[in-house]
Image (cartoon, rainbow, N blue to C red; front, side, top):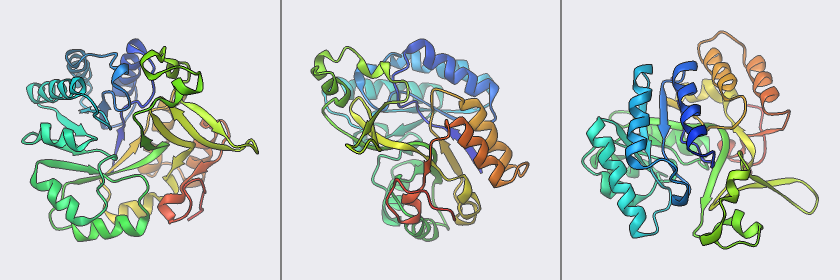
Length: 301
């Protein structure tokens, strides 16, 4: 079972993004790195050419590098950028992660990853995706274990690699509106890049002062960090190939190390969970979707 570092969902700026992935490449035991903007085209701090150059910079680490694309393509300019990113992937022999069906069309004929924002809810969809060049499927984050099990069991004979979002704030929705700009009474066209002021998103609380959601520009995420480390034995039995850890601004190297040590059998699950809890600032985790429960719940297997 491999560890993948997903695309950064937050606005950290060009320099910080480059430094982050260099650390992930040369200072962690993750095997796969996803790079590229998924949330908002205004945050294209790296041009398609610069994205390709970053991939070249990371290659000596021996890790697989995948170029990720937008989860919601809404304009002709975004289509042009998507085509340019797909071209960079082709030129460099890299896989392309499509998070919008428009990306599937543009990337058809080259090795593709169906990202978690593609509605892969059944085995028939997995078969269809395999026919158009998808080599890996990242299952949607809201699927329950029985639903995942049904997909994996039905496609076991001949299927793409299966990846699962296993750690990080859950990416839930995209919108044409920018929630962060709206919170500061700004328009989307004049957002002043307010999302960059929140390196892990802006947490929204209820009137009872309970954490509810995280706002990240045009994206909504969970307020709690999703964590499936206790479910790893189940995931192995199900046939999951890759676990995705979503970037966070603090302690990411330490979190990757804990996951790696646990997967290799060097620490017990209780110790691994405690270590992740410490690096999460003591905040509660969630895993409810996996267990068919409300997403914000944390269920002990």
